[in-house]
Length: 311
Ligand SMILES: [Mg+2]
Image (cartoon, rainbow, N blue to C red; front, side, top):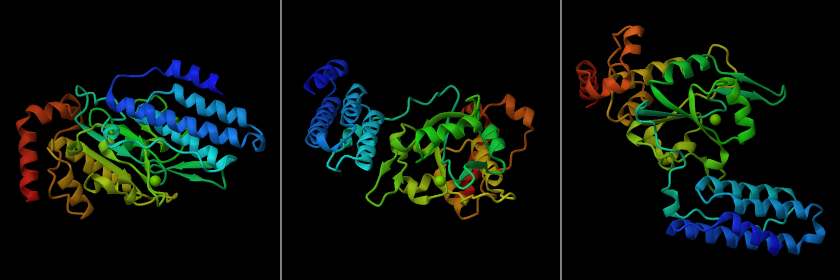
């Protein structure tokens, strides 16, 4: 077992960053502890070598939040399987939480970020039929709101395999959805809620909106969140269509902060607050939202008009 550890240490290496060192130390201590627990129960566990290998493999991962989340996910699944639940997870230090889990936004392409939930927001999985249904308007929604409007991120509390299976259907060419975040990127509360903490994404919260059918999931940034009606297969559902009009209106107006408008949307008072787009589709294509927000007088005026109406 020590041989495994020694190899793993060599593979991992130690980084110089203070927060990383703390993280490495916490992770190594957890791994040593977890190995000792598995060892203590070696005789009672049929596939103990496999568990040891999984624990050690976690050392080979990096020490960013995602890797630690994967380590914790392994610990969780082992507790659920056969190992007595005495394994410990690595706590993510407050300092570590400041590290974004996404690469920086491509400022040449995007100003605004749209974070979308998956289940009961874009799709519904029929467990009995073992197939999923796609919410009416979903394809159109993704197509219309992706570049140049929003950097779209799907953030689901579902497992990665399941989510990728569905997202490869919704966006098979990877043209609409820029990033995918899964269960391992959420923060799990004691109540079992999978928190989607936008502050960990490394995005400007004044330019970020999250849409989810469960409000608790975005409770840390409630002012950025829109709770969409839970969809379980209703064929005449129009929620995405309505939402699309609102979201495109925000970008076309070049609003400095989306949050006051999100509040109005929740109160169903947004239609008068956001100026109607008067340009044709062709004109909109020629004039990207980035250009509008930077230089277009007409759209700056539209944004000012909207801001006035908000007061
Ligand atoms: Mg959901």
